[in-house]
Amino acid sequence: MAKFYSELTQQLQKFIVEQKMFFIATAPNRGRINLSPKGLDTFRILDDRTVGYLDLTGSGNETAAHIEENGRVTMMFCSFSQSPMILRLYGHGRVIRPRDSGWQTYASHFEGLPGQRQLILLEIESVQTSCGFGVPLYEFVTERDTLLRSAEKSGEDGIYQYQLKKNQVSIDGLPTKLWQD
Image 1 (cartoon, rainbow, N blue to C red):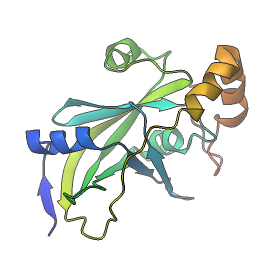
Image 2 (image 1 turned 60 degrees about the vertical axis):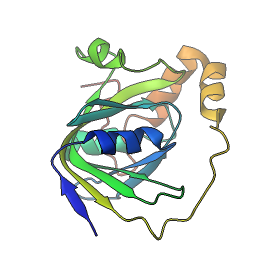
Image 3 (image 1 turned 120 degrees about the vertical axis):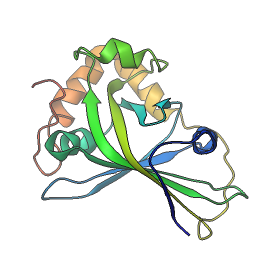
Image 4 (image 1 turned 120 degrees about the horizontal axis):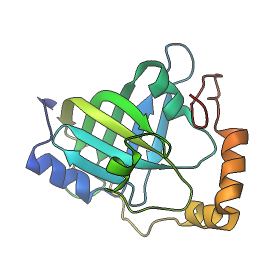
């Protein structure tokens, strides 16, 4: 049975911290819905109504484009262990880039990683839990470091050139504002 909360309780925060991955979903007003899995040590609970993650350079930048257009974000955590639960965070997103005034304040909560692109913050409007009984059991083996190694190999200039080429607009043509306002 689904249960709703207006903020993250201590118990829900503990559940989130225990998960090795999460998913973020965004959608433009018109176009493709984006749903992305995230891992590594990139997620932080900033307070009981604000969370964020350090977004790394990838093949696209849909999340930022969608947030810029309408701000709608859903994040989902689900347990793959013996204690089943699904937790969804609904709210309004905000993108903080290294050139933005809030970068230093928010980035201080994260360990810098190669290829870091921006921070995605979520101001929580609603939290929902549900049973997760249909989620299979999986064992965590290890984090993949391929993305980090690739960013290290590319170096700052290589990452910048890649972002200019691949991360300026979404697949639906929406601006991400990564390197322009």
